[in-house]
Image (cartoon, rainbow, N blue to C red):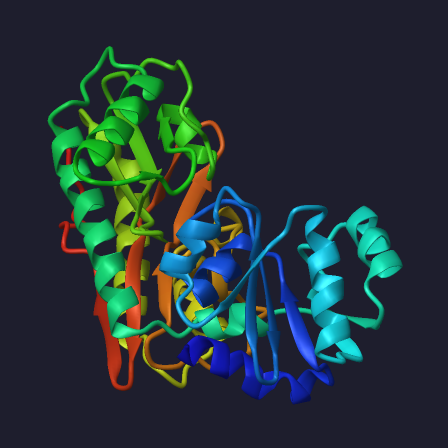
Length: 353
């Protein structure tokens, strides 16, 4: 229940008596609930888990320390009862997860002031426990095994979608519950599309192939990108690959607690710009991973917050030249006091199949 206590300790900072949690990733984080329907209400003294009859038994097993409340009518009516019984005057709600229609619904039936809240639970999620880190390492292990396997599968004549499906099936066979996101396989000129989801394009001799993929394992994600060549890709693409590789390496070597997301982004961005490809690196350097594939902290020129120990972030510089192709290399890093633990072990020197 330490996570619940961490929320309770922050209620006064947000000037609320309780927090209504409806984001299912946050629900899982707080209550360890792996079902699909339920919500959490955390007061200064209590923690309630509200769900319907389909999940009450599961909730009793997973949401240890929570008072389980079964809703037989609309779920927010049970929240209204909790508010009345606990004399809650100000109820925080996750404004990024509540639609305007739902807000109007709960505003009509919940007898207290509704206070919009952003990022309370998400900020707590940014700092991983050792158990969370170990689960993510297992997800990464599955992902790396899949990459090693797919290098023996790719050849001229295969389509991008065939490669993506093979990757996805392999990871599930290794214990993944699902993929982190729609697997990206972009070959040839399509590799200049940073998020070129796999298509029916046939992979050809001389193509660069960028694969961005990951899996869910025990609720947590991995996220990895590698680029390789099928045959000789030409001198310019080899040059671009080396620039991206060195940018990735420079960040890995200096990342540590106390640095800001903006500082790390600048290390890769300035190096790529120095090599003449600044405009072709159009996205941020990275993001946090955990229960979601995109969460805080961000490695972005906008983020002046300092990284802390046990943040897990991606480092994924890239160069994308329309009409030619692109390269991206992505690692997952655990931030430590004096450096970073690089969770990927797969070699990153250019592979030419």
